[in-house]
Length: 155
Image (cartoon, rainbow, N blue to C red):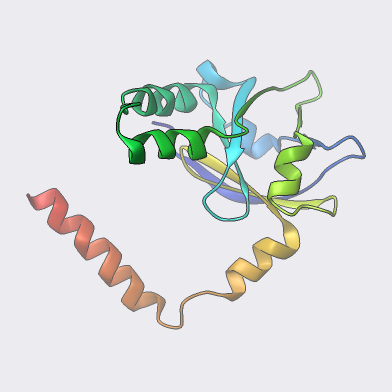
């Protein structure tokens, strides 16, 4: 699994192309350097996955049953609008208009938040608003979330 990290402020050009920052590009595994998959995030953002990570996710999703309604619905909603993107020779990705609309990106200012195996694409204002809604007691949230994880790992 990739361990991407970093926060990058970027600009979209008039055609909706995004230059992948050099610092982020260096982190990409060789198997995924030029190909990404984009889909809708759980929040109002887009999510970019390097090809190798998308292949792992797609394999897991394809194991879900078409005969179980919740699994079928999850597949449908998770994969809606997913598209393959190829980086051009200038390190640009053309972000589909429907993805920009979903994320409410109306300005050319965007933020890439890379963590784990994915890169979230946010409109700059929406990203700032999300950060402004930080839980009052982040320490308590960390304790709750991470202690549950520790218990799962101990089982």
